[in-house]
Image 1 (cartoon, rainbow, N blue to C red):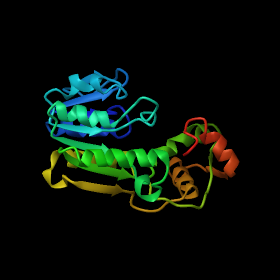
Image 2 (spheres, helix red, strand yellow):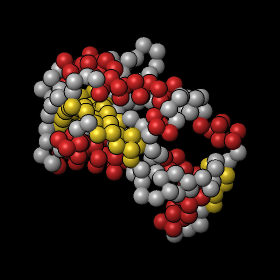
Image 3 (cartoon, helix red, strand yellow):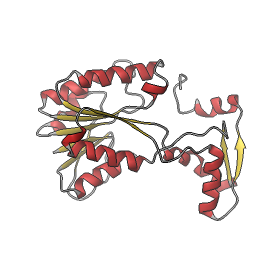
Length: 234
């Protein structure tokens, strides 16, 4: 049995499907009830309460651990999840970390994630760590403005990053869960090329077959927009 947390998200959903198609028994864990592929068991659990994960972990051999952005809130200790997995007899944990532990290691969230990586390394379990950079799916933030006004609004229009498709992250996670040769690996995951927000806008326009304008936000405009859904540090 393989347990997938965050099973209804951009990574968890294709990962759950890939493991099921590979013939594995899979338990999909999410905060809320959700549809899962045929043959997959689904359990509702909140990772802020590690004990609630016990029913999913019982009898499991491997765990894909994806933490929500608010899990480091007051009173939550993600390291307890690794301890819970070990006590339940899980042998292998694949942790979704972030490239930020390498590129921006001094922020509070990056320090916490690095500490969690270290906890996993020292747990005695088999482990692999995935460190993706920017997600290509973040372009979905622009969907409403593209539909309504054919405009993409973003800061730093000519600063490129190698964004990665979450489905590709899921494929790497599946390999780490299924193949022994990835044990002890820390993988930095990026997409195939550097692309700027302006370049992404051009790609969207080409896919739609219609013009899409790019509007470059100022730093303050970007800060205001991001503050609606992101911690101040980010």
